[in-house]
Image (cartoon, rainbow, N blue to C red; front, side, top):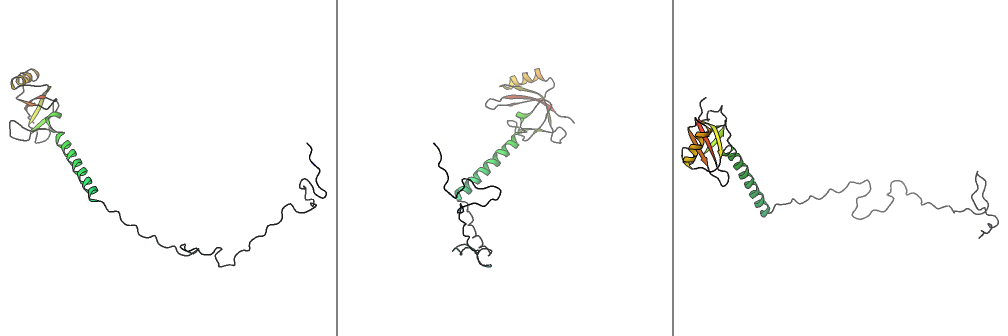
Amino acid sequence: MTTPPPPQGQVPYPPQGGYPQQGPAPYPPQAQAPYPPQGQPPYPPQPGFPQQGGPYAPMPPQPQRKLKPKTIKNIVIVAVALVAAVGGYLASRNDADTAKVGDCMHRGSTNDSNPDLEVVDCGSSKAQYVVLAKIDGTFTSASAQISCETKAKDFQYAYMETKSSDDFLLCLKDYSK
């Protein structure tokens, strides 16, 4: 297939090097819109929008979000539970079940059936006993006495604690500074 020759007076490609083109211009010039006079906005003002260059309207105040009573109740319950858990942890971390051989102990109550022993610093004025041995297992009064005699010859007191699966025996003697 061949291409037909160009019509008379037209050049198939634009001229290079500034030669004048024969025939009509390939694109007619576009008319430009006149610029608006100085001091007037280029577009008419739109309702609800501030004028260009004018002050903006302030943002309306946002309504404050109020907490519902149910939310406040839940926050209080969580806070009380958290305080109770932390308090329980702090109160129990010095209990007899955390005692190791060589730790000093303080008797918190005068009740012989529940002496409420807690671990204290040996340099403290509260230190009353020293742990000579700690033996895991379930004991009776007689077996506790025998167990402490075999583990610590110079013991003076045997303290048994029975919890669900963490039964143990402490062999103690008076602490002398």
